Length: 178
Image: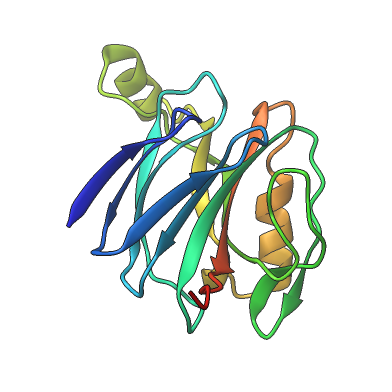
C-alpha cells in the first residue's frame, strides 16, 4: 500500500510497502523509516535550508535483514565518525544527530560545479555563456570507487556553499520477540 506521511521535521516521505512504521528523533532533523525488503522511496529536501529543491530517490536496501533509513541533518561545520569496512561506509560511533555505530552511510549531500538550473532567460543566457554555479546533489556512497571519493563528497559541504549537510544511513531493524 502506498503511504504518505508528514513527519514533524517537515520532511514528506513517500514509501511503497505493505509494512511500514515511522518514528522521528528529536535531533536537528532526523527521520527514520522502517520497512520490509522493498525499496525505500524518499523525497529529500536538498541543502541549504533556504532551498526549495528536492530529490526523489528510490534506494534498494543493502543489509540482508529488515532495515530502516535514517535521515540526519547537521549544521556546518559537522563531525562524522565513519570508516570503510567490507566496501561499506560504516558509522563507528553514535552521533548527536541520531546515527548509531554500525549504521551504513548510504548517501550524503555533495556540491559540484554545474550549469545554472531553471528555464528563465537569465539561466539560459548564463548557460550559453558558460556560467557555472555550485549545485547540490545526493552522492551515492555505495557507488564510490574509492574511499577518497566519499571523503571528497562529504568535505564539499562547506560553509561557503551551504548551512547544512544531509546524510542518509541504513540501519538494521531488530525485531521484538513478542
